[in-house]
Length: 204
Image 1 (cartoon, rainbow, N blue to C red):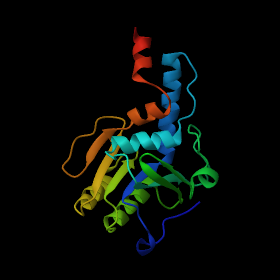
Image 2 (cartoon, one colour):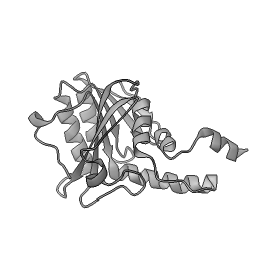
Image 3 (cartoon, rainbow, N blue to C red):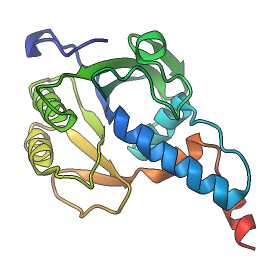
Image 4 (cartoon, rainbow, N blue to C red):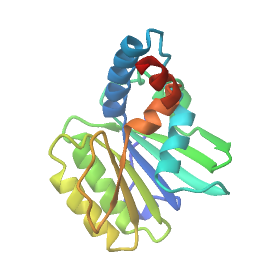
């Protein structure tokens, strides 16, 4: 597992996706359980590259030669996400990259030590990003149903340094002048292979 080096040594890409991996794995589990009941079929684990694609598109990224840095934060001792393909942090994610029509996604995992929390580490990372001239767009996936006040303060401050932030949540978040908000569930549904047409057919 990797950790974030001192600020002067961090080489950030123009586009950054910060993910609370434990949270998104939890959300994917509940979506799988609920949609299996609704659709009456097995729902496979979420396709991780597809999810990152959908998330990046929802964040306003356009097809092209983009560089996208993805950082997964996970609890100490957690080796993999249970509800995603390509889920093992050490073997399948850390230091691994893939390329598609949106550009190159470069993935990294960070283990959260006992003396801190994922929310605190996300806040510290946002503060690091605020110091980087290379970063232009940041997409943030964290548990917005918990106390995110300090994290969002850091986001608001970082946005003053000409960083565009998109904060994803399961519920509609109150709009602000500092950052944009998007619904998280749409990208996960796409990665789980669930379409609006299939849901509509079940309602009929």
